[in-house]
Length: 167
Image (cartoon, rainbow, N blue to C red; front, side, top):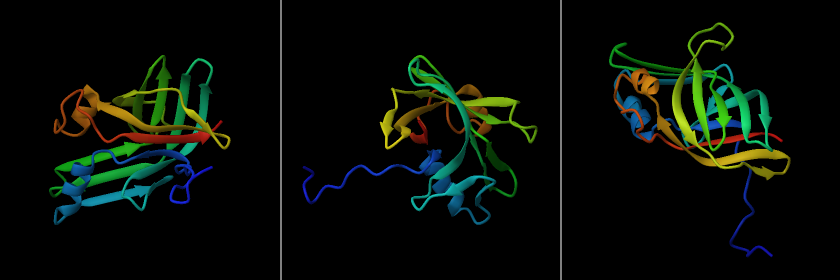
């Protein structure tokens, strides 16, 4: 029996939810010309994170390997055009014990990709017919560091992410 003060675990939003790096988003939001937007399948949650809609998967729960695809376009800009970061259609590719977060590098259907970070993953939980990964650690990759103009060093921790896809 659950105590009256506790509530059952609620499901996270469908898709991939990621705050990127709270300090970065707060900094950009505080600039006179700072702009943060989400479109084409991405939304901004009530807590200020970005949620990318599910867009297909080839994932094998038994082996913990495969690809989860998401869609959406998040853009962060400031400093009169000198700072611009675009996260387009992220994918997570799982191998044994870890994952790679990548983004599309253009509008060509998502096939040309660049790695943004590595994920330390565990097996997902099966919750009400969904596979759920909670608080997945993200370490920025070298190309992810370049995406952020070197503001974050290769291997630096970013905000954790959450994934929810149909089982």
